[in-house]
Length: 134
Image 1: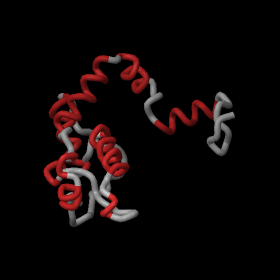
Image 2 (image 1 turned 90 degrees about the horizontal axis):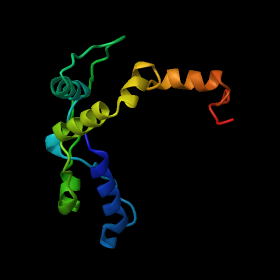
Image 3 (image 1 turned 135 degrees about the horizontal axis):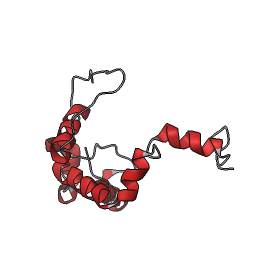
Image 4 (image 1 turned 30 degrees about the horizontal axis):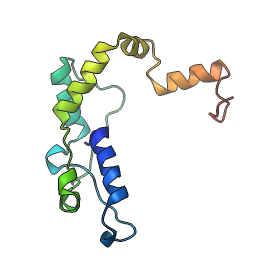
């Protein structure tokens, strides 16, 4: 997992990186210490937000037998390593959601769900059948 602020920092690095690295390189941005499954992220959210984990619909366990490694990123950009860990990220998101009741209300009404929102916009003829703005 990588916080959007850390990803923005990585994008900044990519725009100013040394020319000696060549025209194009591929690298995983993140930290080996912050490499989680979706279930592990859910557990952190559950613990910090004091809410139970609830699985809805079919459950397809993650069958990958590997974890992404970030060694190359660590070697290429040692001074631009991620600063936001999962606990700090979840706390920031939780505090912002708790602090903005309009966000919570919107999610409770279904506006926070993509399909519900798309259906609403389509029914009001704001989006076309091709999901383009009218």
